[in-house]
Length: 458
Image 1: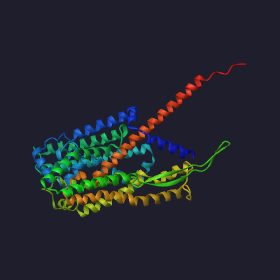
Image 2 (image 1 turned 180 degrees about the vertical axis):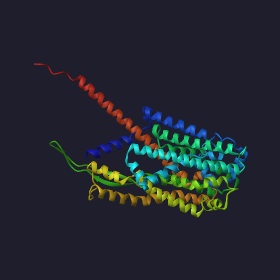
Image 3 (image 1 turned 135 degrees about the horizontal axis):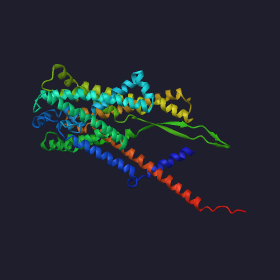
Image 4 (image 1 turned 90 degrees about the vertical axis):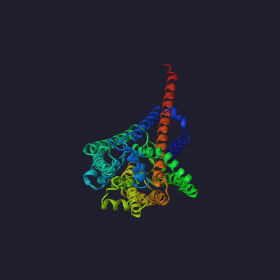
């Protein structure tokens, strides 16, 4: 009963949180300003061009490629690819490298052992991720440099241009990786997700203006414009509802005796989110789809038959693209949940250590099996929701000339990252309130002890 009372008190405190409390929480305010400062640095970097690029030719090329795969690249790089900025590769090589490392950690026994070594093992895996990022960035950067030269976008073609382009792009990606890690450690929210989020949000006004101007010129009919706005609102509402959806598993705590007193066993709930992995599967799936097509987008004219076939079948809106996208989303929803977001063996072990149990289920292995069964069933709905949100707008977008920024993936990223960041801000405010209450109670305690008179000696 005591635990439920504490839980309800915490819920009541969370409900009474006001954003006015933000002024008093100096640590949180510093974290927010730090995050905003680094994100401004990122946005400025998207406007610094790669040396040796012919700006006029690039604009003409991107106007043609904007409707195809170039539009997706532009969305995930915050417009840097259309301006061929120093962050043109974006954060995608880092995400791809982290996918590979996580897959290896689940498949290779030596790497799996590193995961179990705690902080030391995690640092080692992070190191491998950084090495992988450099490798992938070098491959993609070289491919883009060669493709830019082949496409006639270089002012002074040659090895010097290619090396300058490669060093700039790889350096930009490594700086972004460092920026994301700094935001996660010393700022607020997930740094990598926030970088993608800011890139999308910053380009939305321009995409909206272009979309409405197409409506005014008659290129897109008024019913389509209204339909797109309604679709975006419905998708946002659906994402918010599904991200908050929970499956509560009942947990019972036994009676315990402390000295001569017997305390009643409490009960609580273990929340299992319908989508524990959040926006990660959509970002991972998009990242893998962009790997083979980044170079193809730039070597469009000089592409060989194999590359042309890849672009034809894995282009946005193509059946194979949609099928691969859905398969990757479902795979990563299960993979990321079981390996990172909700590790059933860890949850079962923690419950056992706290003497908690699920009614009718034995602690230990049986609890782990039951939780695995529950999570797998819940993930059927979770992965289907993610796939639906990402795919349906993509199909509609390919039928009508709708900008990428109104697609399901971008809406999902924007809404999920916003909700995650707000919840982190609220948890910081809640912790600040708890600290304030503890300090007040300690001060009261000191005052009372100070006022208490010493007993008279007899």
